[in-house]
Image (cartoon, rainbow, N blue to C red; front, side):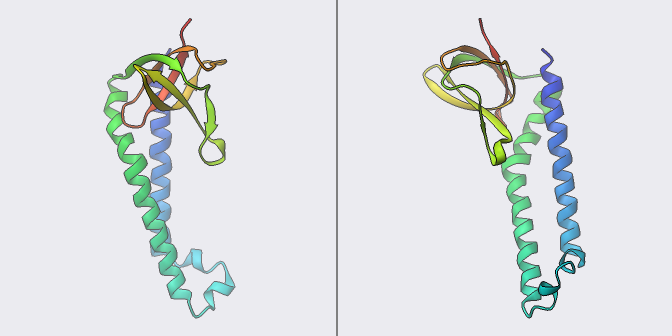
Length: 151
């Protein structure tokens, strides 16, 4: 299996989405255009407070994204480039389940050496059930994983 193609695809997508978010934040902080769309807001006596609040909220959101998502991705990038992944074998504590906002992310909990570890699944074999032996290949900081069923 080509682990590099899967991991690098998600790294590139994450970087691109982050760049778009940062550009959007800069545009929002510099431009007046986003605030001219709603007439009620523009004529409100609290217009300046609303602008500052929205800008502050968006900047805080980008800082949060940077700390909790982008920094782990940056730390895992050399591992992806060098194809240096961590492999672990264990028993599936649960099957692969949808989670996150709108069910966009999948996760699995694997028992490895009597420890439950949760991974964010990028790709998994079909029909992994509770108790199946699995091989997990993952990146250490993001916990992005490829899960394969071991026969």
